[in-house]
Length: 405
Image (tube, rainbow, N blue to C red; front, side, top):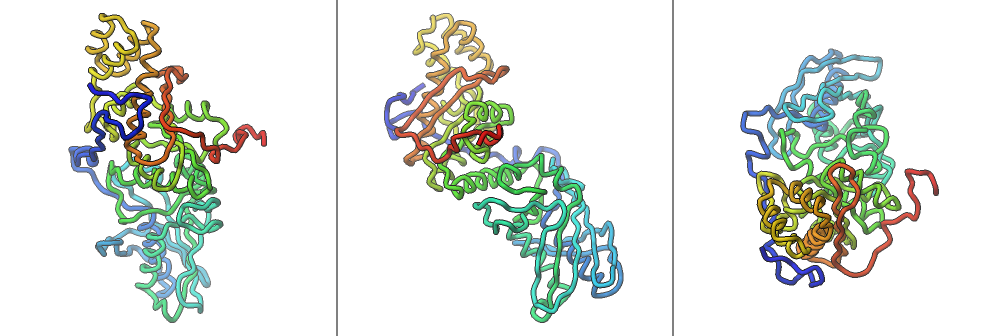
């Protein structure tokens, strides 16, 4: 197994760097899974039902709206539709299909009042987040209703009234949205008080990787927009906890859970001018990244025992240990063999290999730091670094979570 020497520049030869895409069987499970509808599509349907009720004077039972991009028409039952004196309110319950979506079952609610001013005046009500930080492509201080859903809602209302001659005030709310948002990245991104109204296609596709990729891009964009230049990547919730303990001086927004999309996050960070990347992970993901695989989903990568055996030998391991690591079932098994033998140098070498690969893949002026943490204690057991300089704009000098600034 050819390795990149820790001290060599990123462009030096090393393992082939690969970022394979997920196969369709990983994006959508083998059995036929039912797609669902985005919060944007459900909001558009609720808005159309409300304005139709207001114009006709009759509560609506069912409504049809078009999807963005394709224009496909989709019908929705209206869970509730009420008429007031000068307003109407309608509810469409979100059906996320077979996708494990935190907003599944949410009551997307639209209250509509007609106005003389042409066009749609869109506002956020209860349970819809408020934008407090730049970098999201939305006005700071405004509701977290993304551009495509805004157009969907406007188009849906425009199917009922002529928006060139009259207007409508549409307030979108989501009862319980603030509670739902606690299970999303919204608070970290500066979206407070509720969920975002999202969707670019109008459809939720089960187990699609598109949403995760988009959330990674958005998180990196926010870091850059805030003038910070450090991103800390982790592959899951536990490694993110470890990362936050290791770097308490960084703003919470700097921490991005990338899952399997390390390479994608790196490219985005370089494109946005970030200068420092820290990767915190466990042996399994690090072993794959050390072998040059930037997309670490189990269907597109495997642990290379030859690499781990090579590192064991380089760290001074006895021949019997080298052979045992070469036969290890998993990277965790290899790490346990290193730990039992007291061969901590192998962890450092793996981190150095990963740092060199990430720097080479990033292809830009970026300091790469890699930290390996223990599976159980989450304490650091290895470190590696590639690049020069130490940017500091990502640091706030105090930990805002402790309230000491």
